[in-house]
Image (cartoon, rainbow, N blue to C red):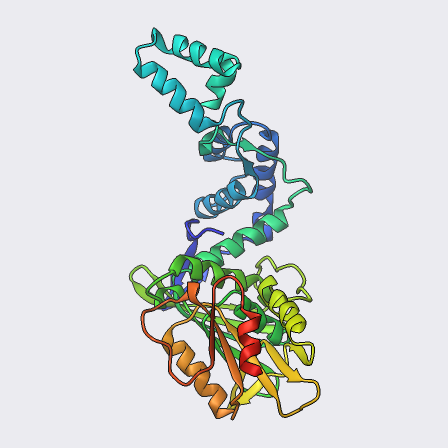
Length: 381
């Protein structure tokens, strides 16, 4: 995912309106795809040059630039080279610097030493440059409809990369959405405003001091999962043209949906559960227990650890991704409000987004890459 795609939008008062692609754009999208398919196997620079020319029919400049950038990332690979390009450049340029008799002589001498032809060596020199990468076939045909949806998703993600905060009001699929947000490590709080609606308040990349690019990618990855909600409403405060404006998205907006929700969580969580079960055969591990109600908010622990022969020995465990000390303090306050005392927070040390110390009094297991099941077992006894 990238955030340097051209932003195609208009401002209406204090609201940003994305210029989404729809059915009216399908004719020129079909022409663009036909031109790309015609140049499969050719260097990317040839396709870039062709798409800078007018098409018949042609699309609006801003939308066309967005689609071209999306296409460039969907099907491009490095040209096969007889010699690794960096090695080829080092040897040929070094030979030339030593005073070989002209370019052809330098190529011939190096090629002979590598047991390749001069043409093969010359083709290898810049095979790793973007313009020399080969335009590849997508495999299954990419339709104008899917291309439009992919472009709309890229535009939405680029806008959200400029967000200071995001509010999601969803109905249906809420638990899976919260799980995805946690899996991506997003800094968010969850509340329930009615019997059916769930609200997620998510920090935006511009609200953080560090790791904004990684965090922006994680936030953008949440967007396609919204399509699986029965209803959703997104509001984001975005910094555009040196002022904060509001972005609104809702059910039915033309954005590429994610693949169907996966029945399993991350390898990190799966590995912890497997290792803990092996270490503690007298303990049951329940993934995704019922959410904890704290006032009008909901807290979603990742696991409940329950001793099989002693019901009083029960712990909740939550794995925290991106975090700030203030975020951890607010999370602990919610658990205290819900009168949860047996809580273990597993903190990813690699995802700290601000300086500061963790609050005292919390049962914390710090980790990098894997949650230490033995450390958790020592806590629960």
